[in-house]
Length: 373
Image 1 (tube, rainbow, N blue to C red):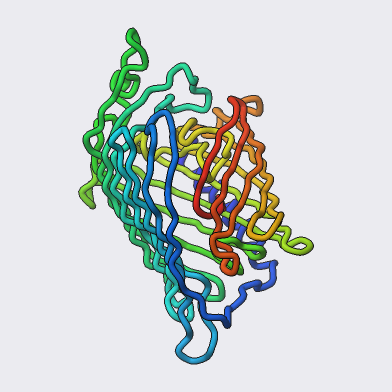
Image 2 (tube, rainbow, N blue to C red):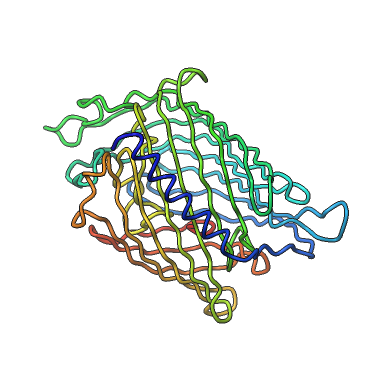
């Protein structure tokens, strides 16, 4: 796909989203209740790549009161997760999403160190499970965004991303089949430094950032990665993420989400656009499909069941692609599924979710803190 066509597509989707926001009423709810706390959560899981994994998570949450009246911001959260597996893999991850007083700024970011084993199938929307290859890597990185409120529900600001992939080790697909990452010298197959700076434009009228029941979330961003920040890869990245929430009768919620991710030039494979995982088309394993770009949309119906328990039903469709000619109706990926929700904090709707998604290649299961969108 040529660059000007990509930019036109992004502009049209962005304009349509802004129009939808402009036509919707202001649904932002300013809280008048103080709220803060810390929730400890034990972590225990098993996967073929990690064997038994165990650890702990802490979720801190709070609202800051205005200096001029009795109102509070929407919920701010800080999450810390640390785990260890019997395959000697570790993951330490600190993530924050903080509203300052009167929501003048949104401070968002993460610090992460990871020693992990992952899978690579190829870089196209028709990659085969027969090409599954395991690779190992270490990661250390940070994301730092300071987004200023520039109008009603509207934020704008810079985002810095610094990541180093190192100790990357490829493995043969089989005894008689070498590593495709190494054989094809896919960008990033030896690891490297991925540093970039971008700008975020955001409209956020959700009533609750952890579990919205009404409102709109729109984020459009663009980044430049390259040697000017000490990086090893030079490319551009453009994103559009648009969600809308409708409260039906009672606490029944209909939520929709559309995602567009476009990359140009020398994007490393570990930062390519992907389908699969616990957020986008949950019927596929994480990074099952990857290419230069992705476009997808999904819908989820959420409803209460009993006390702290709720459920969700979801479906979605989309695909990865290098150019628009790769997009074919018969190749589109779909997912349908259902999930269980347990409220760690019913008042602030901080949930653990267990999702089972089904796609073209079978079922996948995920246990995650927070909603997919």
